[in-house]
Image (cartoon, rainbow over the protein chains, first blue to last red):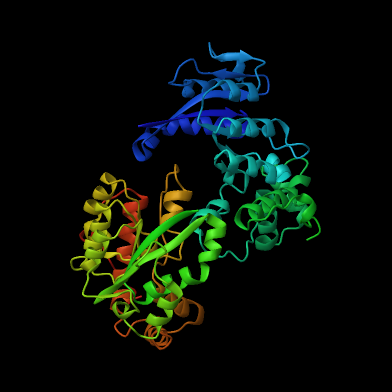
Length: 256
Length: 256
């Protein structure tokens, strides 16, 4: 059986659920795909939990620990204070980086260093973080190509919708002429309420906030910023463009 | 640039359009994927056209030739009378078999030999033919696994719909709980007419026949046989089953 060693950077909502899935489905994945997924390290803001052997971290225990509100750097004998993502990526030998820190659209944040570091090590990269790809698409993909690294960013591009996987893999060899859709959950909820129930925009937004679908500050969603980022990634990956935020016009749903 | 040598078996509607696509899009595919697609041989009922060098057959000329109604075995200096698909597959060194002969659900027809022969040669196989997979799923896939050959049968399973590619690749690692849909074009046309325009079944069927969507003998479509075959392939590939026609209940749309 092939073993795949994973470094996870970012242990917030996405990171925790990723670990939970590994804990729950490892046996299933072994059986179905012949792959043994091993978590070698989990890095968060103030340190990391790092495995002391090739069999990786005890993921089920780690999930319980972080879901109780503890920080990874205090986990059993595996916790290490202060160490950064780039240091972990440089020092460990792992196969895959799963990047799940929060998206930073100013300078890419820590994720940029994680991804460039993983490319230097020849790792495969799976990123739920949009920042480095929206801001530095050309640079990052060029470097990945030179190092023969796969960059997998479906999780950053409306993960549950058929976007990049379908556009790149299932439609390989075809000419894709158009992509359209509602790429943002909050927007989808508000527009559906307005259309199906005749709800006013403000009321629908408040409902979405009450349900926890929309943020207290909903501007990232309703002003189209999130959709703009996803659109850029779809344009670049499926239509072979190298667009950035400056290249596109964005209009939110606040005046629909 | 990587070169991929292809043997095409079957030069009917599907085979001709496949060759046309290669002729039209070879440059585009080279540029986008770094792949040079070379057609080494095209086999039909009474013989084959076989390339005399590594650069393959002149595909654009061959497409014109067969679209004018000529047989492949009479094509220029490349035509060879009598030679069979299995002989071509055994004698030539090629990378990919594209199997596009008509589906035979009695014993798999010539396609079974083509596919088993290609597996023996360690080729990748792309099949638009359902027969061997519906009838001998377990045997064929076991042999392919042992020889490390990829068997790609999306083209046999409602090609234009998101079935196997999405179920196997895009949804890898997830638990797929249900697949439902209208998997047959004739059925889709008739049911849509009945629902949208209140057309009676018989009238809708006659319209479909007039438009060339339905066959003169529509039983394969409207009695659910085509859908049954596709359903078996989806069940086997996406849900890891090993079902055959005897395992499922089929009801057509003739009494809807």
